[in-house]
Image 1 (cartoon, rainbow, N blue to C red):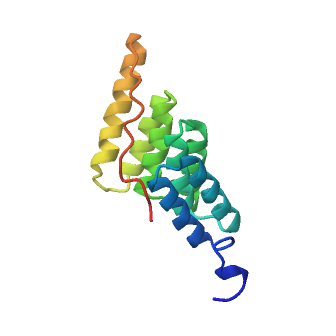
Image 2 (image 1 turned 90 degrees about the vertical axis):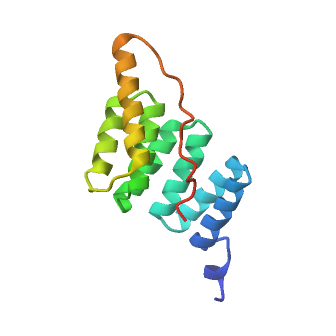
Length: 147
């Protein structure tokens, strides 16, 4: 490929791959920046999901939620539903987390991670009702990358 389209500066797939590499090496802030550049070049559910996970790992749960929701609008996937539910769960919005899990499970897929997250959200909701708290928000799956 010749020209700007072949350069990693404007090639969204190359940028996403660079972001994945940075993420895998623990350079989360740099990965976030590169995923953002990739999204400027082309919106992709894969990149939104990856940036969502990156934001989640940085404790930016609102940003993680927004990106996961954008990913779902582009292409609904189990991973997208998981990312939305994870962000809602981390934000203490357990009822919304349960709904997000149910939407993902409605596809007929039997997804153990999504089922487990639903159970966790139910426990969080119950704890809220009884006045207890569950601050274990680092229970994100280790299946980090979409692609």
